[in-house]
Image 1: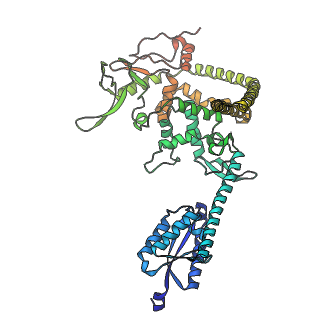
Image 2: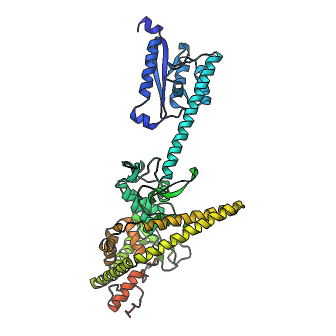
Length: 524
């Protein structure tokens, strides 16, 4: 290092950009640093460090880059370090923040300089500095107001102006600008999870969580899990129903311009289910290790049987089902998992109706499908009439709100209007549903008929959630199991009861050895 280099005034440059978009595009920071370097060259300064704060608001004082710079200046206080900024707005965009940082730099031993303004300690220089800081603050606040106004106008038109959410992505569409569109395969996975919860295929949020975790495309944390709160956010987000709202901005629920993953009616069913009951936390062993857990009651006491792994003296683990109700004759008397599940599979294997009866059910379903199609026109007229009634009710309530003076009465009217508006959205959705989207009979009932023809195959080859579905659809009540006898006669669902009636005495639902006697229903 030459003597002239050693005699040069040391300086640091401070640059700041306020948004992630600027960081991604590489805009701002590089040009600020270049201008600071040019100013230092003209002044004969040597820039020893450049400190950056990226995607940091100008209203903030607590910044990592600023902290590092202040620490560096304090450490080299004897050098009377010059602090070069491109513009006063790069230091702060608020008078209070500007004064705080200005004082901090001076206290650390730094001297603030800029090619855009000459900082001084006299009253005139301070007045200009404070005015420029105030103007910068006004510009920041004004930009924020304009941005919010544009976003509010956008959402009132039915567009989502905020960050996208999982299952959607933004796409430039002519006449719309940035519009949310499906992001596959995540959109289909989330749609299946939402519709499954609404229909009862997934009884709990924990089951939805496990379904998401079973799909490799779905994002997970470092432990390969999906957080419970993440699942709840998906279940409660009206954006998936093709709607938008922003209550804190006074923007009520309205039809969005984007296509939802589910209907608003399905979304309403999900909310009703969420409000109707509390759900137990997720347990990974319920479905995978013990698929019958929670579906089998003890025949002695009627209490739901539980399951666990038991370790033998040799250290080997063995799976068992058992009753844990104190006072029960079979209390803590273990039943080997293989014994119970083999007996269950034998029972399920017998629920295989003949092809003749499946053909008969298919014909019945086709007739019902045709009748529904014929009644669709009349149903549509009834829906239109209901929509007219709702609109009249809303208008009447609005008139009452204008005349009301009691705040509690006004609040009650507003709550009623909000409920009617949601009903109106559901009805409007039905009216505008495209007939072309209704799938043909064979496609809709293909899986149903496959299930009815042989539920055992789905149990044996399906996923954990498919097994839970089999239990819910085949049996109307929990199964009863006696430790030394096996399963008692099961109470099957209405569909399988109907198959019993069709088959009569020759029913394929034959009793197996160890079942309690039961009287088959004869066809009338």
